[in-house]
Length: 176
Image 1 (cartoon, rainbow, N blue to C red):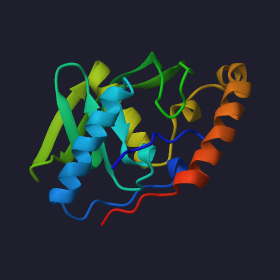
Image 2: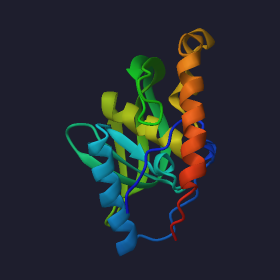
Image 3: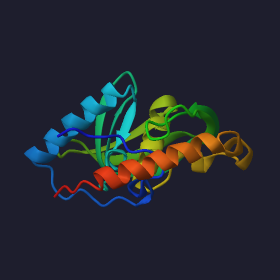
Image 4: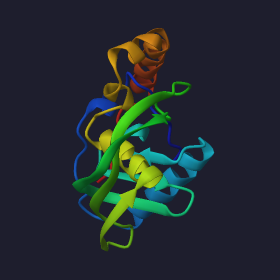
């Protein structure tokens, strides 16, 4: 299976993703393919909706640890809000400052079916929040000021046109 990263404008990116019901061999294989796709695209995170799958899971690598995150929940936001530049594989070439809490307490299932509860901070927390937003149908450009968005409006418009074209070509990928 070859996965295509979807671009802003693809409706799958705006849907709230559905819960993952089972972790079987087929799903574990999909996690591996997504991991390869994330690294190939030079990303630090990749959520299922970004490859056309409306399910609640993502891959992330903060440079210290690769996490395969299934059915995540953010239990609590921690610390002050911090502004940091973000980009997204689904909105290539656009980098904007986004304000997010410095830390999060999270709960999720890993690829071994184990429940993980942990506190994440700084860069790791930011990646988690960014990818979690994808599962809610939220993109990082939704979290910036109107003025910041106005500066990249024409680029976003072009990407949306391309995103809609890719959506027609590939449609939504169904997984059981």
